Amino acid sequence: MRRKTHKISGSARAAFMASGCAVGLLLLSGCSNNIQVRGNLPDPEIVGEIETGVHSRRQVAERLGSPSAISTFEDRKWYYVGQKTTQFAFFEPEVLERNVLVVTFDGTGKVDETKAYTLADGQVVDVVSRTTPTEGRELTLLQQIFGNLGSNVPGSILGGGTESQRPR
Image (cartoon, rainbow, N blue to C red; front, side, top):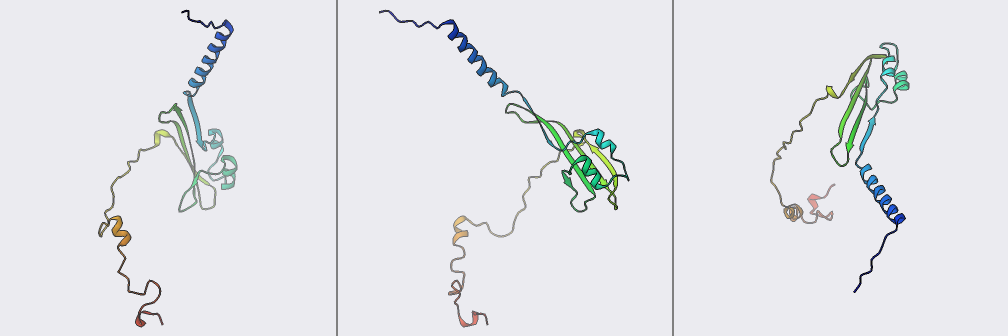
């Protein structure tokens, strides 16, 4: 018995190789670094133009845009927060740059002070995993569901009850 052999022509082989290379390049491009910028990263030149005692809130907002956050109890501090991160494939993102600009205003609404913080100024905050114990009993699911059965005065569920229990 003779086996049939299939020969692939040169142009078909070239097309197959080209499509294989294209698929390989597409797969590799998914592994490239992905740089993302989030928040508001004001231009340092524009920040340098803001003068203490001269510029008002409106002028600062016109130059830098609206702040990322405003202080909670007094609106005297505006925070401009932004960061640049990179991520390779499915790995954890890495923070490349983080900037926080704090603009403080005086009582008249003029700039009192500007401070800039970077990633190097940040501090790691440890999250406390303690739990607060509660007083009382620990009830099972069935005790929670059926615990109130029989504890009500007869008739009070439907608005009835004895004469002394009815509102006057």
